[in-house]
Length: 495
Image (cartoon, rainbow, N blue to C red; front, side, top):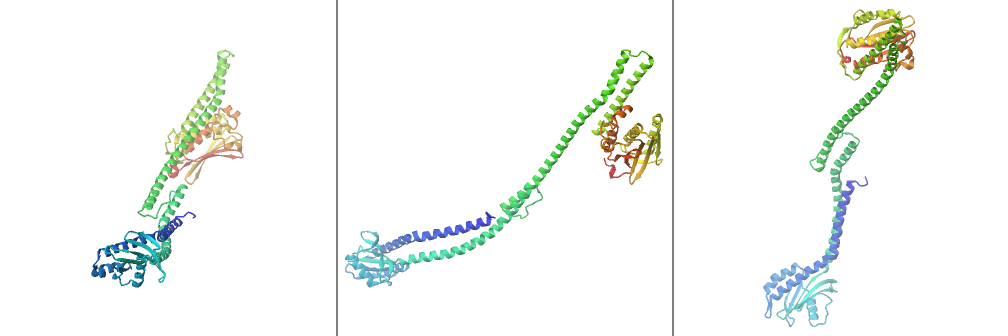
């Protein structure tokens, strides 16, 4: 990674070491010599004052010179010589170059030799830099007069500070190299400790951005990164719960919207279909009623016919409205199921007996092929409604041999009841639509027997409410409608 934390830490540590090195070299080369010179000047002045206080016209305090003055000079690598006004030596240090310093002091006093690089000058002393050609060394010299009337000279080697600065710079260079290496290793170790959990948090945030809330921070730790990881885990759990709740709410909202749209569509379809279906019978009732009112035919037979038509159409309207109400209750779940165990063979026998007269009127034969006792589970009243619709549909479409056959078949834990009638098969393009409300395959024939196109929709709604299968099968000589019911208790009965 171009901007990785490891590189940034290494760069920061190395930059800090290099900055310290550069600052140290700058200080050594620019300020160290000035500070060192200043310190030496202070030391020279201090020794001068100590000498001036302990030298009198009668002479010097030898014990003081051999003790305190000698220790001070040795500590600062100073050379010292003190003479009276006739240049007789009063005191000197053991490391003094006696003859050279006496000659130099005499030259300064009689002004034979001129000072070169004066650093400080007062009425009693002068401090200067002086190159000693014989030793090829720079010295810091201080010479002047004493209150006792004598003369003194103190000097200290000056080249040592430059050597020290050079050695210090070289040492700092080596030390900086070692420090840079240590800093690199330390930065790598530290970055691993910091970067590893940060990388894990980066991967965690990336997975959370993709709505993967199973990701968890596992590196632990009690520092700020560990606390951040713990907050990430809590945030992940909270987001997962929030999004789950939001999805549930959105799903429920979508269901409500779909249900509302479906209800609106059903309402529009219902109004359209009812208006269409009621238009013809209302027109007939109105026309024949107006004929009766205007006495279009005065004979008794015509009036009876008019009344019969009016009553027939009113009966059809009443039946259709009743079926629509039943269908509406089923589709909206307002009609509660009453599941119980009953003998469907007995129910079939009762229906065959009740429609026997209608079968005779249509010259149709009804046969039952099945056992005398068949126990099933379901809502007996609604199952009877399904059977009634199937039989009514079969009577209205029976043709050819004019045979209606009701059969019962055991299918594992299911019982299949079939109602077959001879006649014309249903066109293939109409099979998928016959369960829709008000759908009619042959509108002219449906009108002839008073069908409303709602019966099979009621069958569909009833079977769906009980979560059972139903269907239709075309045969070469007729049509078979069927439905299934559970023959024993089990998961298939959960509704």
